[in-house]
Length: 358
Picture 1 (cartoon, rainbow, N blue to C red):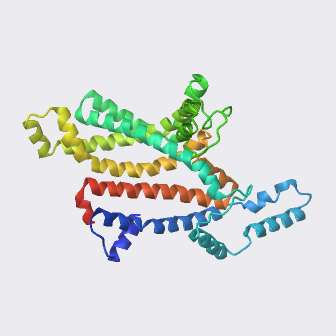
Picture 2: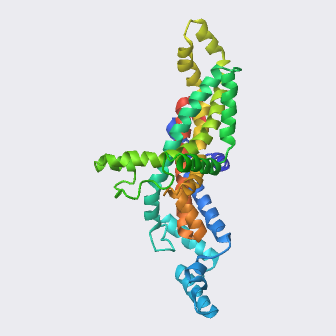
Picture 3: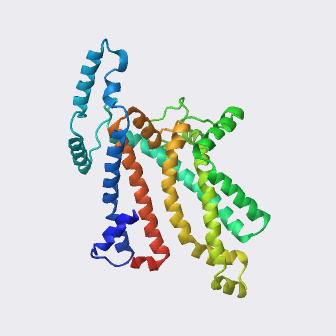
């Protein structure tokens, strides 16, 4: 991202003034990023061993090797996989420019339809995990900074380091074993109980529960959301704790904080009005980057908990070599990540006017 931005900067394009100009310049980078990622995914998925034509042709179920080979050639031709790679790439770019993501090789389902079904679940999981991680990380980070050198600071940093170091899949498996198998407190698979008849209106369960006047959906949805959310949030919260602590400690040493204390302001007022206000810039920047990590972590978490989001859809498509679904899911995740990071950039220009000159 920074390399692409640097290239565009050296082109010395006309710059609209103020935060709006910064936002528009950074918004212009999004198509370049998506094009680069789409090209990378197109090549990467085709470098994997195996071909979708092989599995779709029937594997070893045909009567003879000759029949299987004929079926494989027929399937490859029907899917366009017999064309030269450059021709396939050109067709892919042409479809992408016209916002056509194609259909799945398995079942001929529209990729847009599959993403429309899966994306709300991923957004719900990511927002829930981000909310929990921010609350835990900011609170513990501020407390550790204000109690620097005490046992509270030491224990908080130790717990943050451990939680940040544990991989997502390990936390997920541990959560399933403890809370799902041993204690039987929470469900461990899916998004809603199979006994509930849920027909999506928007795809977001909480919003649909309101629109459809079905409050019985809310609590089962929350129960299924808890374990994958906490799995993602714990690791992220540990990292946020350390960043918040370092940022708050840096601001606590500034002259204006000492001046505020000399004027008789209470510690709570100093923290709220001066410390947090000036410590937010690096914190917000890190949160934007960590949102991308959460999207990546959702691939693991959704797979472990069989949560029907884009991450699980992507893993299944990779295993099946379902090229259109892999490309569409990767682009959806990349678009979410890019938009969030540009929103964070805009927020940073609001928090620090000096950045509007960039």
